Image 1 (tube, rainbow, N blue to C red):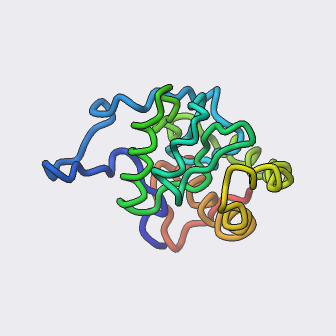
Image 2 (cartoon, one colour):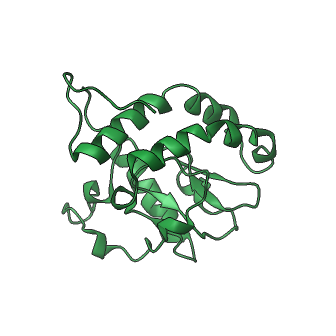
Length: 173
């Protein structure tokens, strides 16, 4: 298998000091998982009650979009340190501290499957999302393409507590 296909807060390295930061080093991640935006793709990061001032996407354009009301959601989990830094930056500029970084503590295989099975309903809202986002086509392509492989690996990680290896059978969604 490939290296971990997502990055977590524990992977964050402070560029000035060169040290790995811990979750307690961040004040911005106070999002409540049970209040997460339904558009968030399962993973360590999510948005719950964010501002609707359209601040997150400029900070993390590869990972953040706005729903129809302007609230932020993670449409793709960070896949490298650059994207991770951008998601942290988006969380830092959200005045409501509505980003969460502890999704791994809450996602289950059942919840991941439920989210995956709801994606057609989310995709049906694509035209409404265009009002605030210029990357809706990219989002649609991700959800109808590579997202399935990412989610199967993530679901395995949630179930087994480790990354899958080539010999492992990934769960069906």
